[in-house]
Image (cartoon, rainbow, N blue to C red; front, top):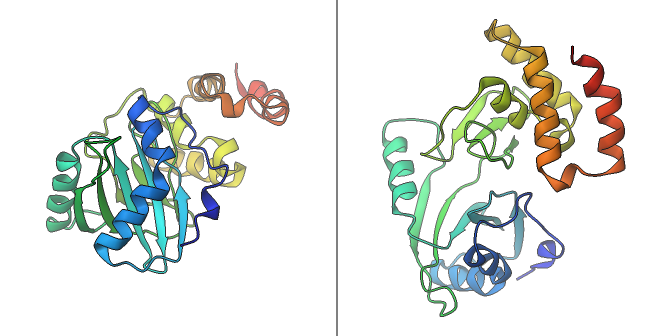
Length: 223
């Protein structure tokens, strides 16, 4: 099994606990156990962006996604299954279970279908791309991932969902334009201030290139 894609991979937020850090550090052992248990015959493991409470990996050639958690996942699994039964846009759950790993006695996983050509992101707010999948071409919602998503300040949520230094300025501008076409509530000052707050909050944006972009692309649009 090829785990080379895991080398140097980091999720955008720090883990929420020591257990989550251990979960990610133990990915090779845990994923090997899942592969054998589910008879997936995985050849390559590809890490996917995840938030601060879990880890996500695409397994090829099965074309499935496995989500690792450091605690009970019944609530999320049940939500996704019941949502699918109601024809809501969610990934299909194929299996779920607990893992036998002494260092993480509460480790769990579930396997779900992979939704291609979509993006998610990482954030502290919940109504954003960390909890849904958006089509990269049409910018429409493709799947709901988190049953606990809730709305915060609209411009702050929009800022999290469209960070240009995560997905590029083309995607960022398309998300803004789509919002403006469907709502008259866009507030330029609050939106671009939110972009600055997100950039300050996350160390991944603390780079010379982002700083230069802030002065060139963001600050002139405030006020």
